[in-house]
Amino acid sequence: MKRHFDPVTLRMFVAVCDERNIARAAEREAIVASAISKRVAALEDSVGVSLLKRGRRGIEPTAAGEALLRHAREILSAMERVHAELREFGRGVHGSVRVFASLSALAEFLPDDVGSFLAQHRTLRVSLDERVSSEIVRGIREGAADFGVCWNAGDLAGLQMLPYRSDHLCAIVPSSHPLARRKKLAFVDTLGYDQIEILAGSIVQITLKRTAAMAGKELRQRIQVTTFDAACRNAAAGLGIAIVPRESAEPYAQALGLRILSLSDPWSVRRFLICMRSRESLSAAAGPLVDYLHERARQDGKHLP
Image (tube, rainbow, N blue to C red; front, side, top):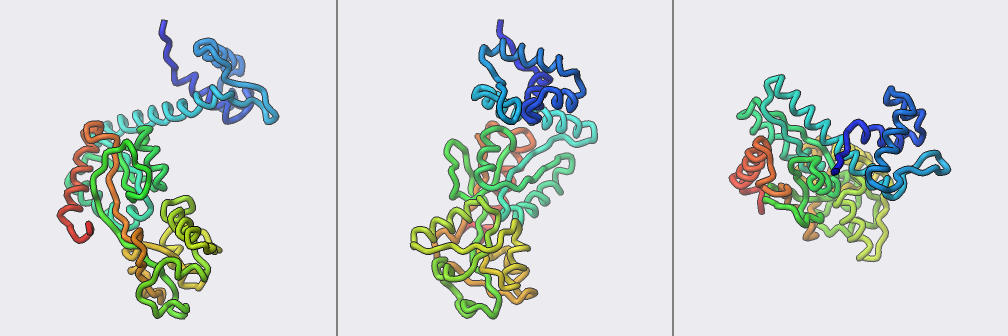
């Protein structure tokens, strides 16, 4: 007889893996420890493999347990999203869309486009979550997001894509910087100076490090920040050169006394894509939003060089 995983058992299994102790997991779940032990034992009997083992730091998942833990987190997260979306219907919301997007998309153009859409669809709710490109792609593939918006430089194999907008990476420096009189330069020309790292692990940072390595030069990153605002302010303070989208730097340039230097590198013009598992897989709420974003960007042709 085929058996299915029940969410209560999965939640208890996750608690044991998190706490590495059945007693602490039982306290967290407000249940007696023996009940958790019985559920885990029944789970192991059902799948025919051991899922937990005693380790140096307490109870640890086996290799099979690690696989189950990963899927259990995804299942429980998906169920939470289902409950949250259904609750929205009781508040008059007739659909919910979750979008994973890069920092650049959220800082530059996506909020305005989504806001324009919601002005016409007031019973919908859209959640915009900032992620680096690898997390965006994984979230789409695993169903954590309805669709994503990211730079086309990432690994997007297996996803359906629509062109969206673009931006232009540039270098920003204070007016007193030795490079301040330059109007355009290659990224390698900046490598003799300290740099500011923005959102570690992003494709931009990976691209910068790869470009420096190919030139046989060192990338000296003294400061780490997570927003373009912070990058501009640190650059203005003389703490390093920041590579940011021109579209994000321009509002700060005059106020902070920054010089914007265009980059000649081919990757400095970034094209963003709307990514999804497939157009057919989108919900009744997500489909119209994707169509709207794509069409709005198409009509605003200056953003799609």
